[in-house]
Amino acid sequence: MACLVIIASAAGLAQESAPSLPYAAVADPFRLPEGVTFGPVASVAVNSTGQIYVYNRGPHPLMEFRPDGTFVRFLAEGLIQRAHGIRIDRDDNIWITDVTANVVLKLSPQGRVLLLLGAQGMTGDFHPAFKFPLFSEPTDIAFGAAGEFYVSEGHGGKIARVRKFDRNGNFVKSWGQKGTNPGEFSLAHSIVVDRKGLVYVTDRENGRIQIFDADGNYLRSWTVTGHPNGLNLGRDGFLYLTDGNDGKLLKLDLDGRVLGTLGSLGKGNGQFGEAHWVELDAQRNLLIGDVFNWRVQKFSPR
Image 1 (cartoon, helix red, strand yellow):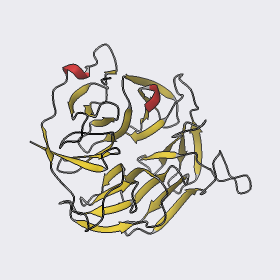
Image 2 (tube, rainbow, N blue to C red):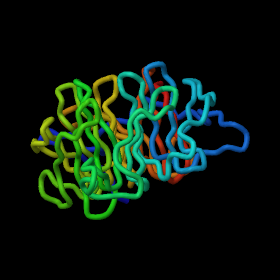
Image 3 (spheres, helix red, strand yellow):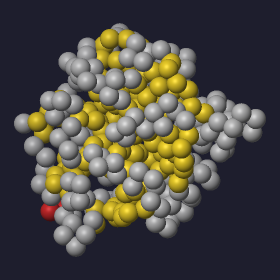
Image 4 (cartoon, rainbow, N blue to C red):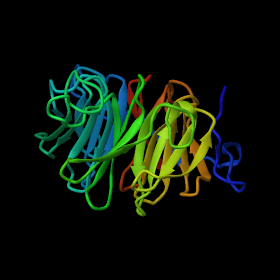
């Protein structure tokens, strides 16, 4: 079985020598309405008040829960074809990507559509008549300090890139293409921006995390053996990475050193089928979306 190792520098810490993170798995952390289940859970996010949003590929793709796991409501009913990425901005707006409809949606905290990027059923670079950007399977969104945002794109097909927009949703620039060279992507899967404005992108099928400046200039990469899926910059200033191939979560510093791991492949409590996405709440609980096991795993600090 493949294990995940990050090589950031000669001083990089391999996974095998990293300690287990001091967390305990929480059994059945969510209370769903009677007769309702999650589908494959693509992603999960937490807002400023601790409300939890689970984005899944079942009949109710977007669900809201209180911090204790009590169900609140369904959102965006009838709007989503295939869930992938979800993020919450500083105003608690909910941003989601749909890899089948080829759109990015910004929803208010109440669930109203505030912004639509892309066009359902259309892919490519720009709309031939109206010239607004089109997407090809957008995967994730990340936010800059001034309200600008970035969309990683290309879950399949010939396109793999990052698109940058200003705070009003106007297209600024793009970078990247399909390939294996520095600055290219096989599958740009997840994206985050750190406090310095650096952009981190998991290039899943190339087994690496690539790092760029805010203008898309390639800076460096961290080589990964495995499948780097979801990436999150936690409230604690550390990076959290899911490996869908080995059923692992890794905690990293901003130099790429592995500080700790948790999880394994399986269907038991604390195990993953495919660890796809990760979120850290204000109490340092880890919430991990699992595609193959159709659930969110919650881990609380010991």
